[in-house]
Length: 50
Image (cartoon, rainbow, N blue to C red):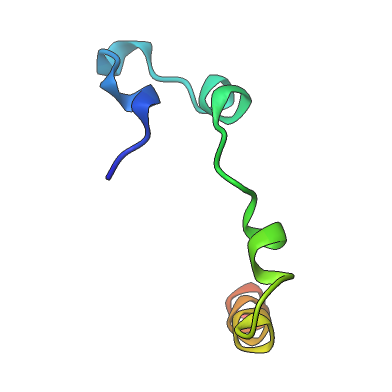
């Protein structure tokens, strides 16, 4: 499922504009809650060091 922003003509896409209108919760906020926090943090740390 894609964000409603991408219903626009592709010539009107702009990453900065998308980030300004996006209402999706930031990844860091998602992994700071719930039982999967430690696993998500480990995956993120592995990704950043790769």
